[in-house]
Image (cartoon, helix red, strand yellow):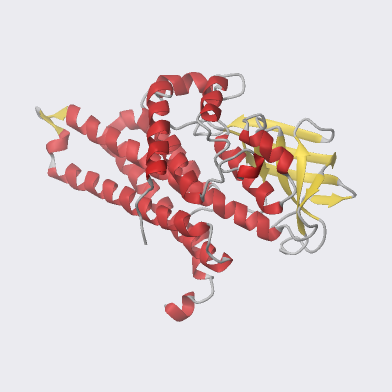
Amino acid sequence: MNFNLSDEQKQLADAIRRFVEKSYDFESRKKNIKGANGYGEQAWGGLVELGLTALPVPEAQGGFSGTAVDMMVVQQELGRGLVVEPYFATVVAAQALKLAGGQEALLEQVAGGELKLATAFNEQQARHELNNVTVTAKGGKLNGRKVVVTHGAQADKLVVSARTSGAQSDRDGISLFLVDTKGAGVSVKDYRTIDNLHAADVTFQDAPATLIGTEGKGWDVLEATADYAAVLLCAEAVGVMDTLNAATLEYAKTRQQFGVAIARFQALQHRMVEMMIHAEQSRSITLLAAARFDEASPEERRRYVSAAKARVGVAARSVGQEAVQIHGGMGVTDELPAAHMFKRLTLINTTFGDVDHHLGRFASQPGFQEAA
């Protein structure tokens, strides 16, 4: 299997990296966080100008039909800058629209950067089991509550999972709906998460909604969309780990104890090597999951995605903890980028399934017990 990026993908990565280095340094990020919407409108415009909103959209709707590997490249570079704009939320919801079909007009708006989207799949009682759905849909009206909707308040529309039939945890009977966040019957409670992104709890009270896809058959689209999101999160985590490793090494070269830089201490050298190994293993397994994502069967896709999310989650926690310890007390202060990187890695692990969830999912796939 070829693990090398194409020339076009390398050029895309270089363009995004230049954007991050020029327009998204740590001080710029802090300024964007304090914006009225929790992100920078100018930075969002920069992402649109780079063509990133158009990248995953089909060519027929004004996009570039980007693959999962293309999107992996984007997320990895955005991870280096800890970008807080609602790009991830929008492209994940756009993936749901693509899979459900019939939403060409909305995808055109996504490609042009005119429409921001988010997925409302999480419920308080469900933890990471997205089939545990209590929000109901009847007569085109939604009732119930979704929680921790990433950039839910910043989105123009939400893709919402709701139950149209069946028991609470049945996979059959789940449908997907489009809801206007400013529409009647929709109450959005916005708040900032520990990584300085925004999330929202959304309550529906007879909220008008538009069915996307086939009623009662939304599980396959929902699960595939969640897997797509997991791959993008893994890629973002790789970018964050790369930057955190570099920052930790630079700090170790300048911080002195007993008259010498702590980077010369063999014990710390070993720990920083382990951090780099974690990052490289995460990069490899993420690329594998992304490269196989578009062509794999659902069973293969689940295995690759869960293997990647579990491995990256372990790596992210280890790299984050080691970085904080090597930085010392400074490692947990808001003044230092390392603290923000560790917080983002922590949230990535808990979004769309943590390590334990994906280990269990991986082990439950057909063939695992026989192979073991």
